[in-house]
Length: 282
Image (tube, rainbow, N blue to C red):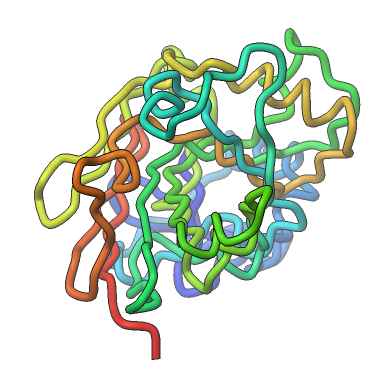
């Protein structure tokens, strides 16, 4: 099942088109895409057996984040060994580095991204996990059972601000408006033959910059959920950016940063792609 945010309304993606959930359910579920996660089990049961009307055409420019207002946004650093190497750090072995992106940075899969013209804005394609059930002290074996679905994410990062203090603070430099795109929709876990082994990648102006598989994550999704839920309560609709593979601008020689006019395309296998244009911060 693919669950989308179309012009701020909850929708199902069916046969290349979309079905408005509030209308199809005769008001049983609201049009608010964020509200559905608090009723996720009820919603998925309904969707599995509902007699849906014919879909209407999908306009990708109308898509928003499938979780537009998450209460918590977690992000994982250095979760690919080669990315740790290019960043000049040792790969973590016992505990994943965890930081946050502030929820106001979340946008959808099609938008202009303003960046500081005197900054060093980088790209980081990531698999995003969206939580579908309240989760506390979840075991690794049960971790996938609390996942609503997966999406494509970009952890845009303003490196100058990120590294301005000592020790570095990650969250502020990764939370400019638009620095947390998620999309193009949520795909439920049952749609994947192996949700732990998906190709992901990123291109800038048509040039491939990142390509890897999530099977190379140092800490897989199940371990991330177990680690996070051992400390905090994961809430329905929460987001986990699971880590980026090598190929970011900071790790290149010479280093490369995003500039106005660049087009960033991010994808994850069996989910889809996002497209963003970089513009100047004004």
